[in-house]
Figure 1 (cartoon, rainbow, N blue to C red):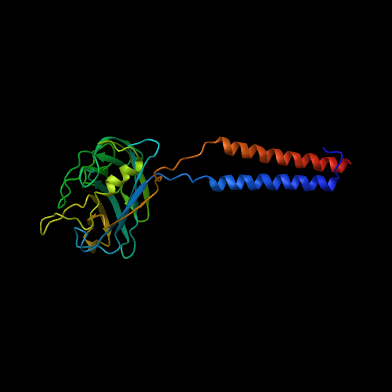
Figure 2: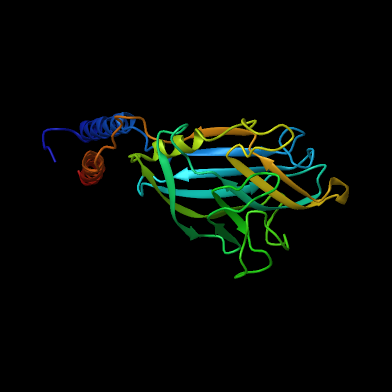
Length: 279
């Protein structure tokens, strides 16, 4: 403690040190770029006259989010939601499928390597099976035909009781993918899948359904007058996350240094306060 300063001056010095240090921390935090979220895209599946194999069922709506890991390149996680509601009083989301990107329209060919299950009620179907009137999809995830370990298929044959009810969601599992030519960022993997999206699908024969790259299957739809089941291609897409080219994540040392300075300033203020009380 400086013997030539008064207690009041000591307190002013402590406040100044604390203010400068806090300002430095805030400036440092403001200068740090926010950590980017893993890139993803989300598909909506809305049953309409132009997207449904059942002529459109008002109230049937599903969502699928594909998230690509920045840390484990080639890793993709699939999450599903059954967003169906009034006038539909009940439904089960039982399967969804997708085609793997090819070059063109994507920048590379993407291949399936493996699948790691998260929800025990859902399984991988690879290679995919036919989903009439859609053609076969490259990969599907589906609830088991009755209960595990009975196999699943893209059409979710058998009991739909393991499917997602109205308002429920799940993370199905994680896919491991490879690419050629090599896609070297998670964002490039995401963009390859986005390039496959078609709404409405193109290239189909008149009077038949093309698949548009993605589909979703519902069963047990109530009231029964709706026909009870529906297959829908994806109707809209949104993207998010990802890290812009050239962005970098700062190392931890500057933040630790600022934290140490802040801790020192608090310690100094406590010493000054104690000295003023004694003096």
